[in-house]
Image 1 (tube, rainbow, N blue to C red):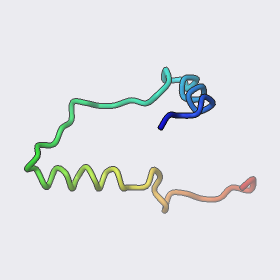
Image 2: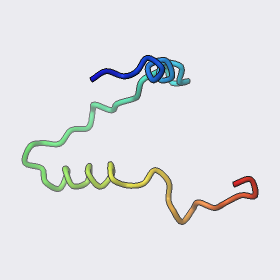
Image 3: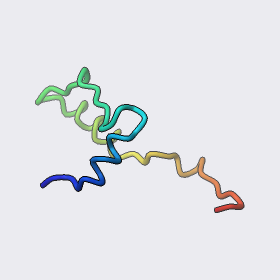
Image 4: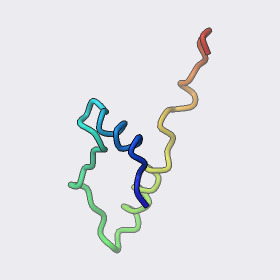
Length: 59
């Protein structure tokens, strides 16, 4: 499966140089269940705190 060219063009145009960033210094050992749970909880959290969102007049 490949990305549509419009998606590739948009990703390359992002201010941070295109694509995405990755911190490869963090790793979880195969038997580290607590570390895996922390990672999954971090990935599953919402990008914004729901209680900090509020509506403005413009929507």
